[in-house]
Each structure stands twice: as structure tokens, then as C-alpha cells.
Amino acid sequence: WTTLLISLIFEIPLLAMNHKVLGAGLATVPVSGWLALLYVMVFATALGQQAWLYGVKGIGPSRAGIFGNLIPVSALFFSLVILGEPVGMREISGIGLILLGVWLVDRQSCAVLVKVT
Image (tube, rainbow, N blue to C red):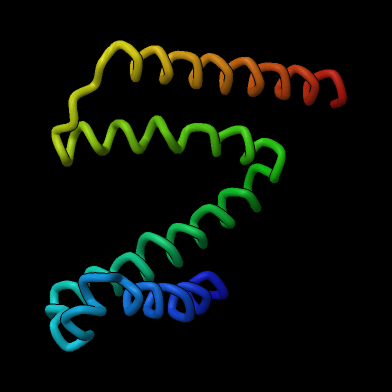
């Protein structure tokens, strides 16, 4: 919950410093804007962080760190599905390199675990 607290402390002042909000005032931010901010703080930040920590506890920090490299892959996937963003050869090549790297490191770490046990 530390992440949620830090989000509350820093995100609301950042919103207040936004040039559009400064010109119009905080009262002009619609309820939907405040709800979107609350959603980002609670679901995307706090619950996402808790899920990550639960996963790290389950598979260990060194192995979980490898899968942190998959964040751009999931971001590209969701930008394609939700936003309809185009995916070109550069993005596909990048995803291929990321997946290859994750596979190589994961395969190597599994081989080390087999030798140790």
C-alpha cells in the first residue's frame, strides 16, 4: 500500500501543476477525470504492484526480473487490441528479440537449477 500512498502524495499535486488545470482551476476537472485518476492509483498502481510482489514471492526475484522484460510486449499487445495502434515490422522485430532474450535467460536459469538439484 506504500505505492498507493506515494501515488496519492505525488499524482494529485502533479495534476494541479498541469498547465490546463492551472489556467482553469481544479474545480474544472470533471468527475470522470477524478475517477480516472482514482482508477490509475488503485488498480493500475496499487493492485498491479501487489500482484507483481505476489508473483515475485512465488517464483523468486531473479526469475521474476527476467519477466519484467515482457512489459513492452504486453503494452504493445494492449495498444493494438484496445487502441487499434498499428504494429509494423520494427515492433514485431523488437518483440521477437525480447521473447528470444527472455527464452534464452529463462532456459539458462532452468538449466542451472537442474544442475544444482
